[in-house]
Length: 400
Image (cartoon, rainbow, N blue to C red; front, side, top):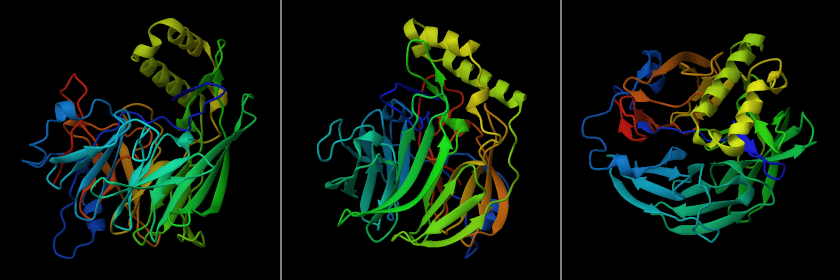
């Protein structure tokens, strides 16, 4: 759910996302796919991991992203703290860097982070800042990449290339504005850009009497970027059962199909979606007084019918692991406390199996887009919160 005005549009809102590490134990030369096939992935912390870090004071908000360097160092971007935190492979804090600002080395809501060519940390910020920052793996500022476009989901590829999504709107004042999502690849040396592909979708909203409105991005089609094992770009559009691979130079390499049947939108789905959104808003302090309270009353009476396409998006996110397997997080007919199901595909696009993440003793908010998980060769990283904790507390754990 994204709150916006006529002057400012937000493609997606990062919800509280949690960080955990989950090694899928390899025996000898056994392929990682065998671990996916062995049953659900259950979150359980490894004794001793992260014990030296004071997690109760480390993160005070859940808007975070995560990536892992070749040496096992873990980087976490905290959007609300405008900082990057670096941890060692044992989960101990090494350092933090960055501050709120517009200058070189400063951050304004750092969100997406990834590792380029094994030596640069690529950091995306608030999309309308139209810039990408590069740091070395010690946290020293290296370079600022500027672009004429908005920057969503910057993704490190190889050979000094970074992909990102530009989002623009057409017919913004209508009830059914069009959202145009264009994928670019940028060279960090020449700063030249290549246009790769474009997707168009409706971006419907509910207009408020007092101005502005609400757009519920969970139901619209969105573009997904992920890096392959070889450093190529994989692009998916959540309304289509396809995944297309491009070289870092923007050349189309191949396309393969994703399994599964789309879920047709029914009155029951619309009703349950509205009930979930209203329930979440009632628990949000912003909607308990003033104009927020008035907006909530309007939304309770509003029709949500026009927010949906004929079918639900097919998936929430696509990630890859270090062995090149594609992990497609399915979009189930569910809006609250949803099971986390993943379809696994080989690097060549062959369907392998399905698996499920069981949260166990933790809370893992992955119901919309679980983009803040990170799979290494034998580990999975994400931010988690203990179920028995009444206070907000993010914690990095490692599960074996």
